[in-house]
Image 1: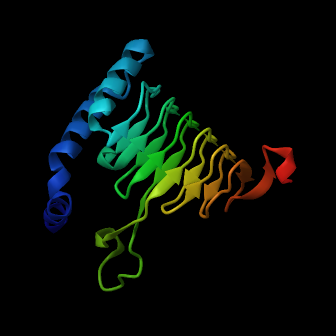
Image 2: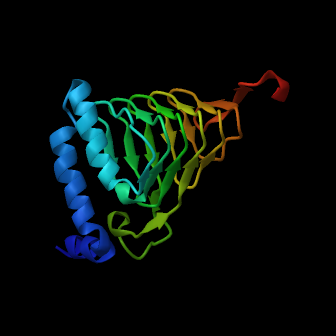
Image 3: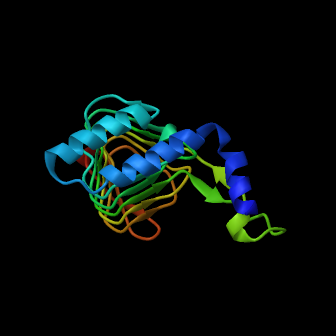
Length: 185
């Protein structure tokens, strides 16, 4: 019961938002086709901190703490992607997010050794993703990371550090494997 009270205290200003997001997200998350995409867009245009235009949110995308999510034009997360914006996430224009990719903007405070890890406070660390970015299937973007315009994140990568403009990264942890613009090689 104390974890419920802690949650209510910590998120008291966002409780209605979180309830609406969870309830209507659950109802609309799996709807197929154009109707599902239109209904999800309608819901999230109301719930996101900012949504600049129509976005293509595929069935099965899980979005949480959307009060901290700012999204540009042409946003396209694919099936199974998970975005947790409790610490703030800003996504530029024409960003593609592959199936089952994960983007988080907070971590548990693992330095709190006087309390069990499951009850540790969250450390908020905003994520910023530039324009024209492609995040591959099953990639993980950790809290506090900035990804520059035109970057490509390889499938299965775990991004723990900032990514430069037009840089292509891959691996665990993600490391540079090339650039989209040949002049930067």
